[in-house]
Amino acid sequence: SQPILEVRDLTVEYETGERAVVAVDGVDLDVHPGEFVGVVGESGCGKSTLLFAIAQLLSPPAAITSGSVRFQGQNLVAMSEKKLAALRWRDFSVVMQSAMNALNPVTSIGTQFRDAIVAHDEPVADDRPAEVLRLVGIDPIHLNSYPHQLSGGMRQRAMIAMALLFTPDLIIMDEPTSALDVVAQRSLMLQIKELQERLGFAVVFVTHDMSLISHFSDQLMVMYAGQVVELGATRAVFDDPAHPYSKGLLDAFPSIRGPKLPLIGIPGSPPDLANPPSGCRFHPRCPVAFDDCPRVEPELYRVGPVQARCLLHAPGYTPAAEAVREAT
Ligand code: SF4
Ligand code: MG
Image (tube, rainbow, N blue to C red; front, side, top):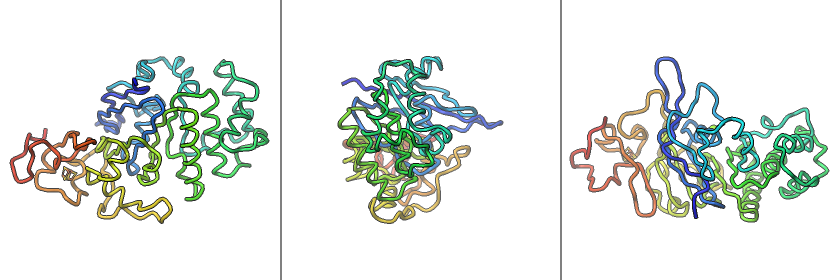
């Protein structure tokens, strides 16, 4: 099938005075109808920025400086705000990290749902707000509730219900479970997956928790320092991660039921994007870095069923040999 979402060479920069900071660097991604794509990385790797860029929700000083985001064949980057506003919620919707911030605290859930319907001038059945609440397992009596009257898990569910109002083809989610405890997180993930399978929408799901997402996603994209460092079928990445950073992420979260541990074998934190390391951006933290890593910029290389941005996988490359091409 044709991808519902085609991201090509997407680059986002932050203007910071003397130099631009590249927060998302030439990302390509295809999402097919009904597909669940996980985007993982530590905070500061550009994954939320990528998600905001896809949804055209960036605000200054961040801006898309090149590339395209085709959704159902239309380039969102070139689209007027008016047209975008009509597409958002109706054809694709966005679920943010904190429903507490996304929902209006002084308006009941039902009023917020009805406002969204009115704003879109779309024919929606009168009982649709009750129906979408039921879909996420909330008693429709809570249409009368205010956000603060709901638990954290229920608020996230209410946000997902709102995202479902117009039965969109794509839902973009930014760590919607991260504020919840492990049990609530697991239950919300199961519910999202069940809804996705039942209703058939595609999902792009941003998270720092690789082992959480690996149970639910079809495709996995691992980001580091604004770049895609590994991309492939979730099973393939999970069973045999090709990039040392993916391995580190997997080790960091041994089980979604277990305690979260710091990145094992990967000390340090993501680089300052204003001043990324030379060569492979991961080299200062990489447990298997070798002498060429600070000098040569890896591309995405095909590694069996996945792609990985690591010199160990460059065609014909042996660490002992001369660099295949000079870093620029
Ligand atoms: Fe590690 Fe070198 Fe591969 Fe980068 S290119 S991930 S530093 S081995
Ligand atoms: Mg984030």
